[in-house]
Length: 224
Image 1: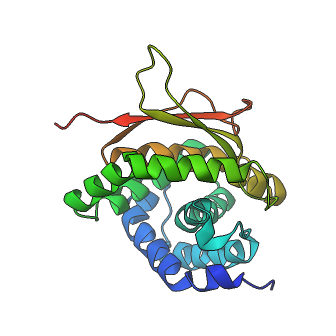
Image 2: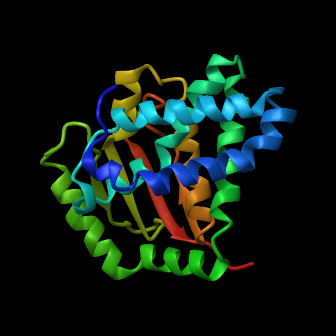
């Protein structure tokens, strides 16, 4: 088997623990909605497939790139999607299982910590970092990386800032490994990731859906 990049090998333990937790949350849905009975077997298959995914994950700069964290947090859902696809689970149900298990996992983080993370993301300091990283991404130092522009709001806009992704690491990965049908489920996870941190994400198009870019627009959610 191909080797795992040293950067991901260093995060492997935490990534595998996150996968096991997701499967714990997914178990009732796997039984009731996917109609799978031998869940121990499914878990083993998913973890074996995750081992394959780990060897396929592209290196995009490690800690120097904010997008490395996206791969670390989300690439495991490719493994879940592949295994459920092999078992004939319909794609809409795969998407629901991945989204709902991810949301349950996100909500294990205390609310105060999640909201603090959201405030940090929306902060002026982080916006400056995003501008810097967006400019660096245009150099395409890593062929499998994301390429994006930082978007300032114009007159009449109702968002605080935006990001236009012109190239997507997940799209490149899916095209290389035959995961195009699973890809939209990965895109769907973004809304949960931001909402649980008190951030409203608006997005009307994606590269995975055939658009020229993904138009992420961010604003703060009003407290309940």
